Length: 188
Image 1 (cartoon, rainbow, N blue to C red):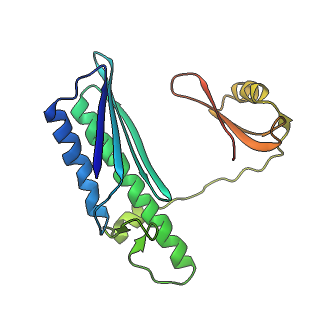
Image 2 (cartoon, helix red, strand yellow):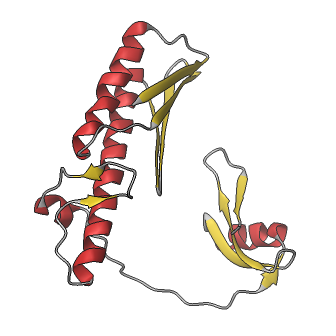
């Protein structure tokens, strides 16, 4: 892994850099081969008592990304690594379930032909990451613009809203961001 560690409003010391590389380097155990992906780590000091760590690991057909805030920078790094591990296990479960449904027995599954294979996995983790869909909703998509969709979302008290974008004539999603502003997701 190639690490790209940068800091916003904080100096990235050698101790911080070593800690990041050691903790994120543990993710190698989930893969049968060494990762060749770049690891982008951004550390920020938001306030005196609030530190933020963002980690992005772009891979072919999979993007691992996690963000965590904590009072202590080292604790935030630990929490981000835990999130990344859960994402890897969840992806592994999803891939294995797909192949089990096709009546194929695949113990080790590669993310693609160029990425390393995931091989650190137990049946106990599959039960832990089981996804249970408990409710299904169906509704008609009304054509509207993004501003009207935001108003509808706020009116309903939801943090996202699916609508048919009248300008693009495609299904889109507006959502409320953590910073209180809004985001728009559109298909390509």
